[in-house]
Amino acid sequence: MLLLPVAHTTRQYLATAVCSGGLALCAQGALVLAFRRSKSPILQRSAGFTAHHIVALLFMIVATAVGFAGWFSPAAATSTAAARVLVADGTARWLSAMLLGELLLWDFPCSVFIPKLQIPVIIGHHVGLLATAALAWVAPLYWGTFYLGWAELSNIPLQLIDTLEHAQGVAAEVDAPAATARRLQAWRDAIWPVFCASFLLVRVIGFTAITARGLYPDILSALPAAGALRRPLLGFLGLGTAFNALMLFWFAEAVGKALGLVTWDSGVSSGSAKAQYGWQAAA
Image 1 (cartoon, rainbow, N blue to C red):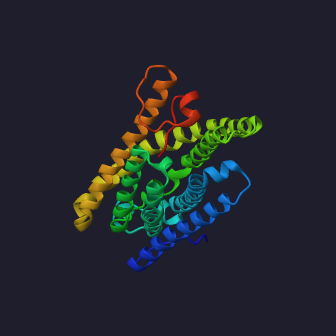
Image 2: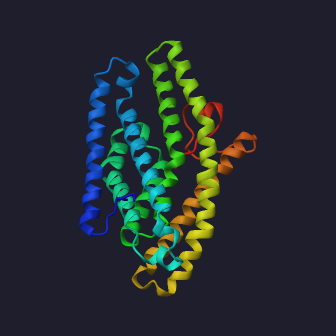
Image 3: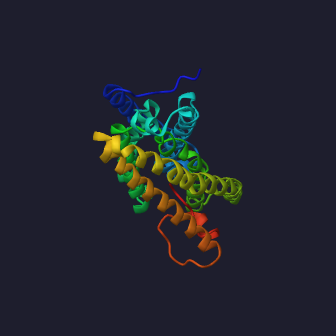
């Protein structure tokens, strides 16, 4: 039987958060040092940004794997609505601790020192994630294995695209060989359809279905017996609605730009994605 990581107690939660943030900081520092000593001018110029995206990618993979495992656990398959909401899910709380630690100790500090990460809409999104993680500390409901876990699946190809686009820009700045730029573009174009499909399936269809058919009915049915958990659960409803609206907005923006019907820019678009497709989502 698969043993899932859990954080049932406050001590376990804080230990997970500190380890998560500490490991992220150490990995960031080690990668920056390695890239600055690299013979590649692209890595030298973009050491901080590239290191950040590699570390974030690793966290996304872990969150996706653990979230999937928790989502499909035998206990989840037989649980009732009340159990999914009112009984603490140790794996959801572990995901919350991992996310909270890396956001506070690594991601937000990186945003201060790396200008390319200072995108207001993304920082705002991460503040929302921090609020979600904090709520899951108090009320670690089963649905957290999706929102804090395998919802990250669509971010994996996006992270690769963002890294490659940034590398393309740096390649132009350092006058890298044309073959390097073409290779980066080819990799980026190969990953783009994977991202589009995963965003549609996970962030548009899956997110909406889980929020409307899972989170909402479970919480609303459990509220009369929620007691002290009432406010955190209402907070989950608010954040779930806000994040779902954001996903649908980004999707509508993408479709609108593809059809030539939208002229605004939410501020997420960047690099060659903006030039070639007019849109790049980040979530």
